[in-house]
Amino acid sequence: MAMLLFCGYSGFAQINKGNILLSGGVSISNNSLKVPHSNSANSQPSKTNIIALPQVSYLVSNNLAVGVEFGYHAQNKGSVQTNGTTRTSFSDETRFYAAGAFVRYYVPVVNRLYFYTQAGVSAFDGDIDNYTTEIPATSRVGTQTVIETDFWGMNFGLRPGLQYFIGNRIALDASVALVGLTTLQTTDEASKIRTNRSSFNYTPNAVTLGLTYRFGRSVNQ
Image 1 (cartoon, rainbow, N blue to C red):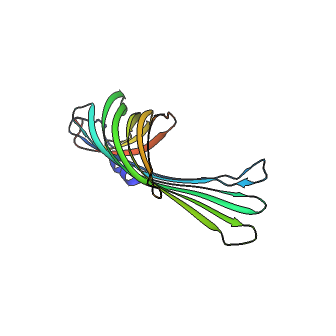
Image 2: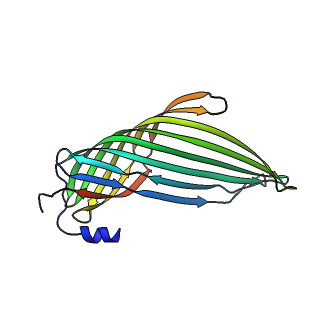
Image 3: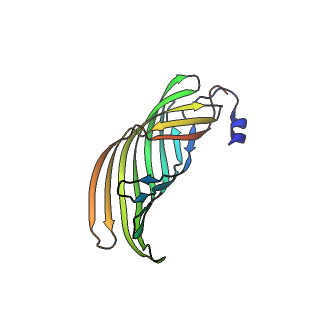
């Protein structure tokens, strides 16, 4: 990343018709917490997230871009609860792939800084595995129950953001998944029962940070 920043830091950055923008980022996070409960049991929840979201867009005019995006999301949530006789662990593993298209409109704010609004639609497909393991206090061997669920759906969303060019080619991105409409179909693998539902999402705290590399000639070069 440092080499890219060094090579790109020259001149005045401006996006123009015909430019190609390659954007994306990878996020990996892990957190755990031990919380005492009033019933004398202990819960140790933890969560790990891995998210990758590359994007490619083309400037059809100086302010308007159309593009495609691909995504991968893996999440592992777990917790452990203990009482006087049994230790129970819960684990949820979620994995899904996504692909979509979007339209983005740029508004120049000051030199190198752009505000944009992005509207897009994406489809996703994945699965969820729920594990429950119970181990008696008098034994090291327990019983495990697994529930497998497949799902697929579509998402329609609006994402405003800022893009700041720290050089002629490299830009920093910050965006917020403001509103969205999600349709989801889940299928229980054991019973083959399907469930359909739709939800309206408002998540102003879902901030995404990333990098963009600009291909193409600037009018100021």
